Image (tube, rainbow, N blue to C red; front, side):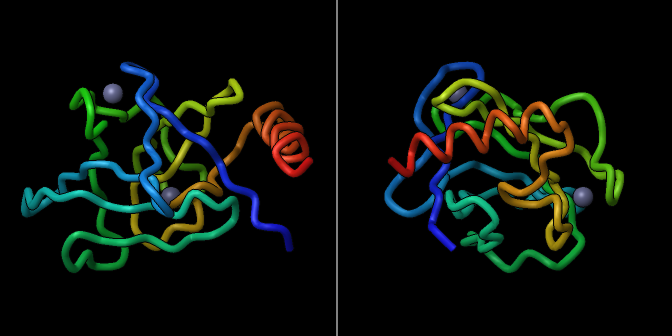
Length: 130
Ligand SMILES: [Zn+2]
Ligand SMILES: [Zn+2]
């Protein structure tokens, strides 16, 4: 399977979020309020994360832009687990919704529920592959 890398940016300040091999976001864990900088794999379908501290499976975090500090949470909930979602913009145009719950398959950059978004992403990936 080809490694398709998503170029993401903050929907507010438009700063590029990828640093090296990770999409970096600030998080605040629900419950105990710990904060840190989390890495998400930028590769489509790759659910690896680089947690700043031990994050229990199923815990929910709030995600912030590390550049402007904006809360990236959006209205709506994950179709799989009903946790909040956060949103990233794609450099190619379009957006991607991501589940805020650790361990949910909607986590990382796979949580696309809108077929129109998915088609847009597929188109972008084909272009990126050329
Ligand atoms: Zn920002
Ligand atoms: Zn979920």
